[in-house]
Image (cartoon, rainbow, N blue to C red):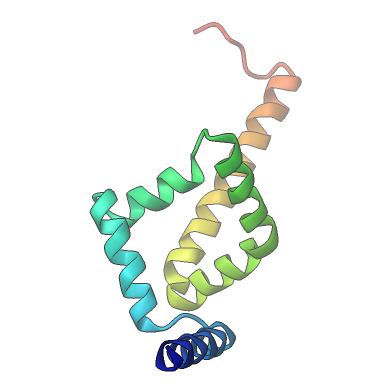
Length: 114
């Protein structure tokens, strides 16, 4: 009984230590294996998570992005700056194009007839 209690205490201390230093590679591997068993790709999991229609899960996504979105983008940039740069350029170009089209429509420069 004492050994069991000691093991439990040791495990609690290990968990506290891991929480302080972040997840171990073993934890990450376990999560990725769980995702692989339910989704064909990591991308499909992330997409399902971000596009969920479940109200509680959607609220969770919103909280995560609100609290950590900037950090997530910074980490993505740190890992693949070329991809993030191209994404930012495409996003800005798209927004600029949308704005220009709206301005032309407002001025009557574009007609709906073909």
